[in-house]
Length: 307
Image (cartoon, one colour):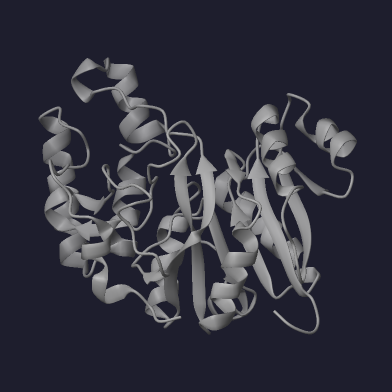
């Protein structure tokens, strides 16, 4: 990174997670920036726990956009992106606020993006309670598993040491060149009010953008809450899980659109949806899990890019 500074706008929607949001901003305040010019935009979607006031007090340089509480994750992100583009940045970094960031992560992501034109770069996501274990990194499509299959046994010692190509990047930490939004538009908040990243990065891949994971950019994430087993849910809980709660991993609408967006074909999407429903009826976990996993160094050996 030589010459003029590289401008990066960091965007995240937040809602009633004050302590997590402040922890996130505190870690971002400690970044090694080098030749980066960084500005943060928080979309505070109707928080009632004092999130906005706390940010203004502790991080006065952070820009806050207020929402009414009806944006959800995807449109909240879109609102932030629209504002970010006003500043004519080179990149927009999309993050979740339940994360803590290594001080070098952003420099490494930008360097990787600059070395590889037309690339979207994701960080290495790790669990903050077991920081050697991967979290939602490089899922692969598996029709017989019911859709995207996530890794359960991978660690910092089982991954490639150079960036590697993937088919989808989850939106916990995603560096996007501004040109993407001119070419491809924003996330689809109509079909994906939550989890818009499940549609966004596969769409970009189809448009010819390369999706990369940069293993040197480390981000530590809050573990997902454990989902209750289907057979232990009462009728109301099952309705909320499958119909009412758009943020639930069991949600049928989310699952249907996610499959259509990510599957190799519509036939694969329909078959994966059928398998998911069968597993749900049988009271099994929504995603078939492997007992043993090959290290990602082997799985993605042909996907590593030359630096």
